[in-house]
Image (tube, rainbow, N blue to C red; front, side):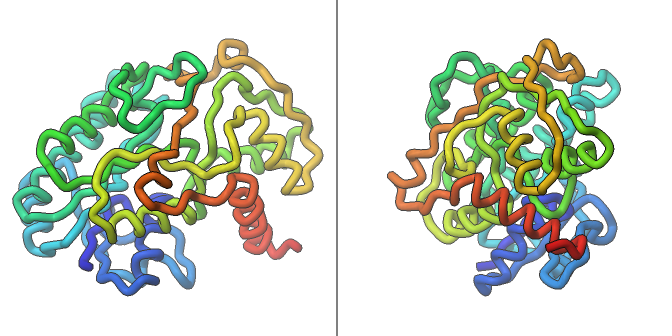
Amino acid sequence: MKILVTGVSGQLGHDCVNELIRRGHQVIGSDIQEHYSGVQDGTAVVNAPYCQMDITDQETVEIIIKEISPDAVIHCAAWTAVDAAEEKDNFGKVYAVNVQGTKNIASACRDNHAVMMYISTDYIFDGKGTEPWKPDCERYNPINVYGRTKFEGEQAVRSLLDKYFIVRIAWVFGKNGKNFIRTMLRLGETRDTLRVVNDQIGTPTYTLDLSRLLADMIESDRYGIYHATNEGGYISWAEFARAIFELADMNVKVIPVSTSEYGMSVAPRPLNSRLDKTKLREMGFEPLPAWQDALKRFIDELKEEKGMK
């Protein structure tokens, strides 16, 4: 297959390109920068053709996708700075990327008969209650700008296309970018105690594992809406932080606090980010490994980078 991946300078886009190349697909990566700006390693996305594409420019998107003529587009590009999205000066930019940009991609996919995969988020739900959210649940009520714009992106895909995947993910970490794990490790180098919220519940998602599932999906015709995080159960951010420091052999005490006690976030966060993933098995897809296993592999990789054992 010929596959275009947007947002390749980010965590998921980087790993998707590598996985698709490993499987023998013809892959083109794109992002807004003139040149690829992600991690430079032996298996990095720089080994794939790269094209600059501003997804907010409809004409540019139409021209590039028509010229490439992909069988499928995996749309990873998004505005993901949740707190910054709440700033009044940024709202137009967030909308342009997450809504208009997604509409542009979906429209071009329709015109060029390409399958589209849209990467969405747990933030499209309001986070109330304790029951896991099912993929086909229609009770949407995003509570921040990021969630609202990602939900509108979903709506654009559903209205414009028949053949699409919408994959909602949460608590993402990967090699190519900033994430909670890197933040905890950085803070833990200079602090012996950290306050971490314990009333936001979800499951981490390792982009290396997720990219394999997304490749399985795009090679199939089992279209629809899915939830995809690692297995291993639901946890709080505080529990995740403790596991990080334990595997990294760092003596940092995690003090659990409520979201209201923490009080540092600009955007409201959903407390219940439990995503029900049973549909994956029902549709014949292999679920992701447990988050505990994923975290160990990621920490080991970071240690290797630093020359640690």
